[in-house]
Amino acid sequence: MRKSQDIIGLPVIHVNTGKQLGRVKDLLFDRQQYLRGVLLESGGWVRRGRYIPTERIGSLGEDAVMVNSEADILPLNEAQNQWVGLLTGQRKLKGLPVMQSDGRELGMVEDVYFMEEMGTLMGYELSDGFINDLRLGRKIYQPDSPLTWGKDALITAEGELFQDV
Image 1 (cartoon, rainbow, N blue to C red):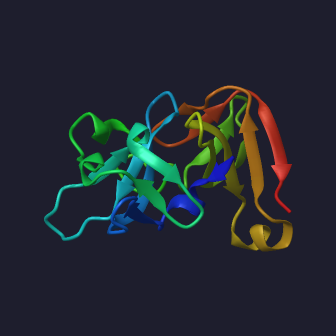
Image 2 (tube, rainbow, N blue to C red):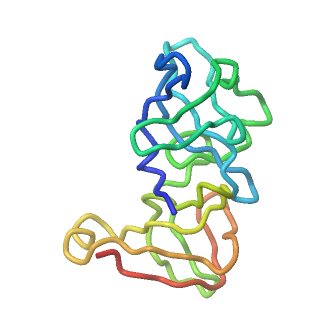
């Protein structure tokens, strides 16, 4: 299981030439909460967004994201704009509260965990605020089923909540 913050900021390297093709700006998830690709930082203020689809990523290493070709980097179009990022986009996950269906708030999303082989979103790192994070650490929430991603909150029925140590 990998944290999104372990991937965000990594350079994207062409495996045959060693050329850096960009840096990862965010991870992109679809409505079924599967990883669909990585968003790259824009090279200028007029350039359209670019991303690498999951199936075109050679590997998500500890120090770099490897691709086989510059052609693996695609421009974002309207379909991809419906995807959800952790940090960017009209519907980003970071900062949204995770609420149980009984109305209890579990915390605010700070990071997500995913299975890199399957691209499945597996858990959420939650914050109770800066002071509580320092005192107690953040919480890890692993839902039993995919959350409902609403406009203002993420809703869950059941899952396990762990204290991050």
